[in-house]
Length: 142
Image (cartoon, rainbow, N blue to C red; front, side, top):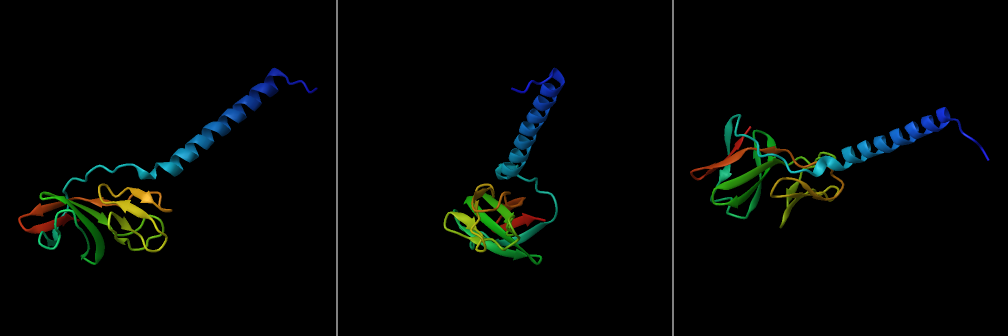
């Protein structure tokens, strides 16, 4: 039977503990992309994305604004959410789904409520933008 000195046992314990802590950090970093995003402040330039007539309560829309694609979801009479239409997995254009936004390339799905990943290989949520309803216009702040 092999005997270990205090120095050898201590070194093994430190190395084993370091490996366990390092693994925990890596796993936390890999799994942490699905957190709820804070609501962005309406800074930047308000730009008309669509109208309230074209975005009914409970509906979503895909719009092009200043050459970029965005996804909108109108939660209620006064609330609209806006996200980039660029999938966080491999950059495909995310489209509309019945209950979520969906990426046609690899099947990632994102929540209307906060842009978080619901399913698929994407790890991070869609980038969220400030949006507002101004009269009959739906504005996105870019």
